[in-house]
Length: 196
Length: 196
Image (cartoon, rainbow over all chains, first blue to last red; front, top):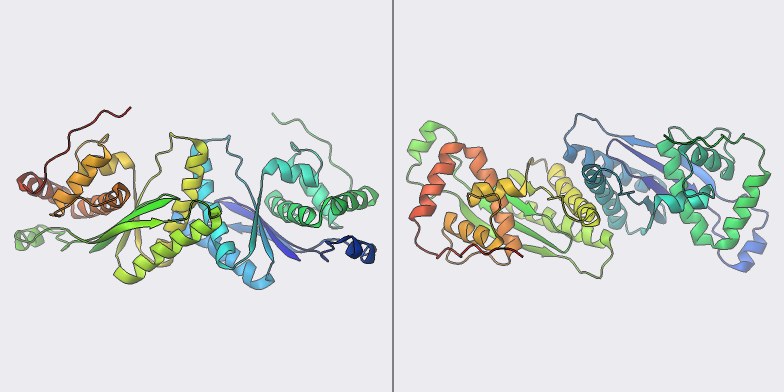
């Protein structure tokens, strides 16, 4: 299974493409117990020009996502939900970006999943209020990367794809991944910083 | 000039296609003084299934707008802005619908205009706080229709297109249209009802 994860934004949309061996039944899990788990195929960001009018930025985002779908043929699209307790205008504009992203997935006939930011952090880091650095760190650990994805928006896209993978594979997969992350010595965990 | 006006909604998106002779210079205005003014080509609504997931509804709205553009070859797309003092969740979902509508116009290379609801009402009715019935009445008057467009969402789409036409043609056109409306005896104005 290949999942395209998206963290929507009008200026910067983060994305991550994650592949998994798709162990979904107990027998599969035994057979694939030695498999390496999910792996990262590609991650990055779609940037739009801050001076371009909204409709042009939406076109760039839509084209970017459509290109990613054409290149990787994902089975599912996982899109981060808007955290809508912020400024209403910001929330509204972000809704426009999510609209064209969901459209790209819908037109391509993908299974579409939406996850709240807190659920993604809870699933990947273990805490719903995790910092961006903690998400980057855990994404690198779970996917056995030498460096954390940069910028943080790209890591957020990967985290969204990972959440989809972990939920599709069930609680056993989430436990196994958590164990793998605990055993991985490649990175040092950043300290949790208190946000001002 | 042909303008496609849209009143976005996830359940019901109203639209109106308005054509004008495009008198934009003083000489034009004299030459076309006897012209009939803007005329309605088509109006209606794009309805989506309330039980369908959001991404399917967005696809239906996008397809509907794309079809209208293909059929009428408008020069401009006029989209009503979201009145975002309401429920934040509603505003966010409406942003998704606006996103796919703006995308359709952008991909087709149309000039894109956005108008606040109060400006549309002010332009078409003369009062920013006009009721839906007053908008329907004035749309019918300005376009010399026998009946007001139904449902009200369709009239809102037409009003948005009319606002674009009236702003493109300048203050003279707005005055001329207002005069034509005053002289038109075809409909009886609905009384302004106080909203609860």
